[in-house]
Amino acid sequence: MRLRPGFTVPARELPSVTGPAVPVPDPGRLVHLQFRRFAGCPVCNLHLRSVVARHAEIEAAGVREVVVFHSPAGELAEHVAGLPFAVVADPGRRLYAEFGVESAVRALLDPRAWATIARAVARSLREIARGRERGPAARPHGGRFGLPADFLIDPDGRVVACRYGEHVYDQWPVEEVLALAAAWRSQADEGARGH
Image 1 (cartoon, rainbow, N blue to C red):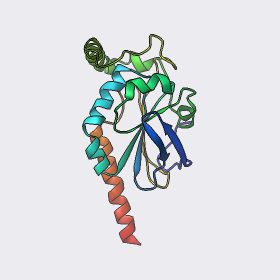
Image 2: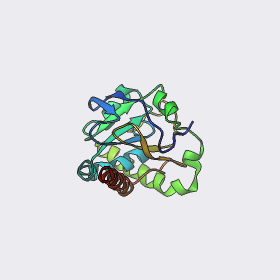
Image 3: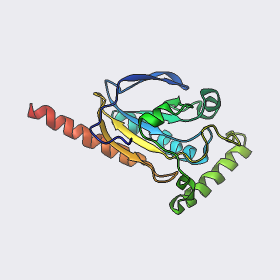
């Protein structure tokens, strides 16, 4: 079942492979909960590089990044060491099921994704050849057909906005996360003034 804005997610602490457990929702800020694919996924790496490059802006906007992969923690840890945000391993896909995040062949077969897939694979091959990255497993845990999804969750656990990807690179760019956070903050400020 896909979630919609207004749905309230139950509070929990998610174990992170990059640091301490992370609360979702976070009582002090918005959470951008991203569902990615598998450890070492070239397309996921391309997207996460854009998030890392603008992480200070994202934090300044009052947003905590939490990224979920369907790989086991041991496999994931070597690919995400050094990322400045929480990365969660969900090899049993429990969170994926709870949030309605799916897998489908269209993840890779949608022509809108092909140029990005080629760019991401070329970038990853260069980084692997230079010894800066490890390649993904030949048969990634959970398969190669995962679809991305994004959720913005307020401190009360309410889903403010969400996006279910139609193909492998169909997710919110950083600009959209920042715009959604600003719109939420504006509404929250307006609501506070109204009371």
